[in-house]
Length: 172
Image (cartoon, rainbow, N blue to C red; front, top):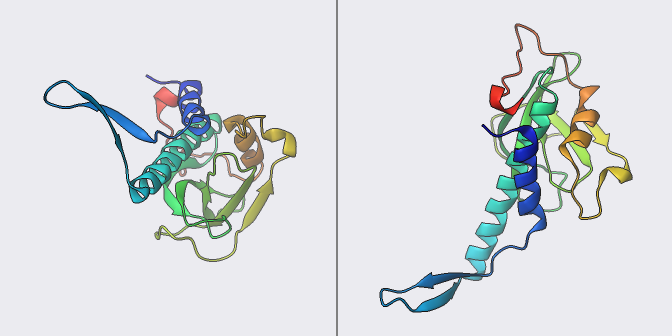
């Protein structure tokens, strides 16, 4: 079983590490070759890496607020972000009862809670915007799960029997 800190450490390692530019392979004769991907493949790999990092970070955040109505939901495109990349989002119940999707951007000390929806592309204005303090971002650009969890805590309803937080027990 992985702990919350293991999951976050894995996500941070991917966040901080360089993306591979070529893959070393051996052919049927045992000779080594480096196979470089196309520009398109590198873009796909960059986007997949972003999703993987944000998924690990979202799991770690959810584990830290397991007493709240929070769960890791699905990838979303945040209209407030600079690009059209997808990142993992949390589905939360805000204080007051509204369901919201919160995209978790690695390295971005800001959270937007949008009205919950089914589409990958989020439309509309955020219900809540939370700016984390500048000190939340560490020297390598990483914003720890604890900083996101602390920022969310005051805006997300407590889990109840009707709205339990389905964080996997292994992550708690």
